[in-house]
Image 1 (tube, rainbow, N blue to C red):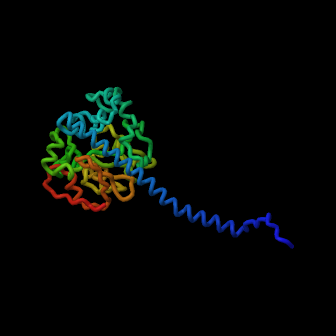
Image 2 (cartoon, rainbow, N blue to C red):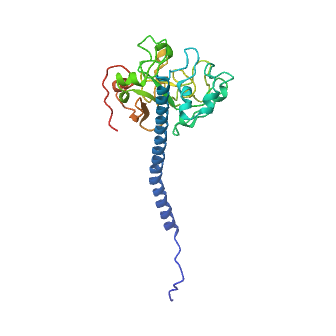
Length: 301
């Protein structure tokens, strides 16, 4: 029998299975690399958001000769990210927001519920819809200012509250110039990430979810502890709420993120560093205070 050059030998079933297995192995090898590359990109976007926030805070400081307070007044809970909107080129929201009225009032609710892309980390996941219309006002956020190394609750009896870069009006004023003359802007935290990753956190009275979990309360317009106020008192980058006693509710206002291994943190000089979850607590507290006369040694990246 003569060989017909036009005849082609078909794949056997075994050969086909081998090819499929090889393709499957290649895909399994490539997927983690692709996912890692995507997360790297998201982390860069998040860091850029913080740089824009830092620039807005510096522009506010230039115009007002002070950094924005932790909230507009001691009685109105309008947060610092509202005050810096004009410096993020969000003029419409800034001009229409009534700063003398509360963020959750009729006049301001629509703006408070507006999603601001700069205030959202693309890696952060949401365990529920924010705001919870039954008890909340305010679109979600991913960032919080640093009030210091102690509990941000103003009635904190454990130590000097608000010893960081951003403070309540009742505790005075802070500025880039004062921080530069004290601990130094490159050593002092200005803000950082705060996600919804506390898997066992169910919320405070008045907004407790009985199904699923809340995970956190970060909403960009609100000037309050654990919402846009962060501290280094609790565990850094926690995934659960550990302490549940009044002002010791430390992980509620801990800086945390959905990035693997650490948290993007903004310093007063405008730089952003990715601080590892395992960072030494003493070092972190030194970064959190604005005038602690402490030494900061940055972890190797």
